[in-house]
Length: 250
Image (tube, rainbow, N blue to C red):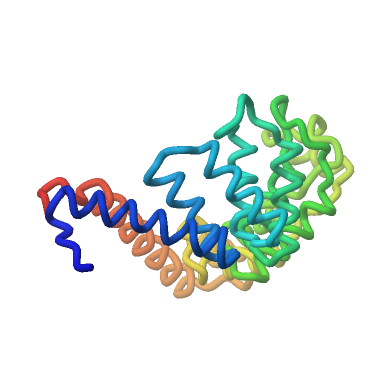
């Protein structure tokens, strides 16, 4: 059946048929990819976060679909579709998702395990978190590579309360779980930049300019600065397009 998507009734029918198709593919054909699409449909079209969460959870636990683990992990993280957020539950889903090959889940697990602050209810485990972040970076997640670069830039203190960003001399005498290593910081920053992280590109430019972790090179510094600028412009253009999309009726 052909639909005229300029007609409101046809659009409604098309959307309903899409839901029926996804339900059949998920519940009858038991296809994990289609179950995930059903979750997305319930979330984005129906705005039914409770049902969407149940689909994501089942697809994660029963079918071991990493993207759904990431989704239900994010639901638990912010409390979507439930009474309140549960960071411990979120970590459990992120770890499952990472195990099932989803780099975004590895990133979130790593960030939770290395995070600090009064609202973080997950026990800090920097070595374990580092391994998750490294696995995510190895699977080309630009944010994980950027995060790792930052860890090596400043180092990761054993006791966060001992670290004072305004007193570098004092910081030399405290115990670190990960010591500052500008060569490692540069390696991860460069990879993050190559994967499209504009902040990492800006850091690489500065490292080349100062000779931090890499031999000083003015030309390379300029090149990466220009790359950071072009990525920023592309990001701003994308945001503008998303904002304007559909405003003129096109």
